[in-house]
View 1 (cartoon, helix red, strand yellow):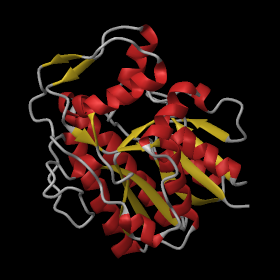
View 2 (tube, rainbow, N blue to C red; view 1 turned 180 degrees about the vertical axis):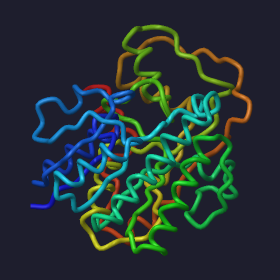
View 3 (cartoon, helix red, strand yellow; view 1 turned 45 degrees about the vertical axis):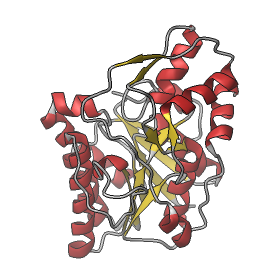
Amino acid sequence: MEKVLITGGSGFIGSHVVDKFIANNYEVVVVDNLVTGNYKNIDGKKITFVNEDIRNIKKLEEIFVNNKISHVIHMAAQVSVSASVENIKYDAEENIIALINILELSKKYGIKKVLFSSTAAVYGIPEEVPSKESNKTSPLSPYGLSKLVGEEYLKMYSKLFGVNYVILRYANVYGPRQSAHGEAGVVSIFNDKIKENSDIFIEGDGNQTRDFVYVKDVANANYLCTVEDVKNEILNVSTNTEISIVNLFNTMKKYSGYEKEALHKEERIGDIRHSKLDNSKLKSLTSWEPKFDLENGLKEYLQG
């Protein structure tokens, strides 16, 4: 039985990736420092858990030595755009130095493939909508930049040392276990306000659009890109559809019973107006298809 190492496996997306591999009878090792992750997301699951910071390469190497790891799914990251602006050095340590540690050990121990979680933030203001993987990248935040630099390190390690990788650029991920903090948390923020029956504020006119992808579809993309014959590729993970924030609010209202109207506040400076990712490359190179459109995903999330 093959054994996968999932960094950040107690986090929002990572814990769903853990579930997917367990369901397919893989042995799973999770390493997480629990700074943003939540142990209850993985408590009681059939895994080996190591509470450690992957910036510590000596401790990380012990995990590789003690477990016969075949694949690494690297989910651990600093994912807050605002936090990346406030502390650029910390963002770089978490998103670049930690990745280099993973790549060094993957090279040393002959890991078959490294899966890397990247983001639509690498595109910045898109040159076209939907964004294709071949489009130019021009991140607007240290977070987007650190993820893009991470992508370049993966390519470099592949060229120099033969480390195979798949880079997954996520659209706006939502679903169970998401906190209202971090990247792309608007669905979670709205959900928290709905539960509290408190006012919901929409920035600007609410006609800005985003591509929302359900976390279970993201977990499935990670699983299939690990086990299927795809390597050394950059792939968008999305539904390739866009919805305005106003329509997102109205859909959530429909499935939650929330009765208030949304309030509007000032538009955020520098906010991207329209964002959508082309997922045709992922669908052509793997058997992946999104199983949840936004209606079904929100329905399961809000009523589940």
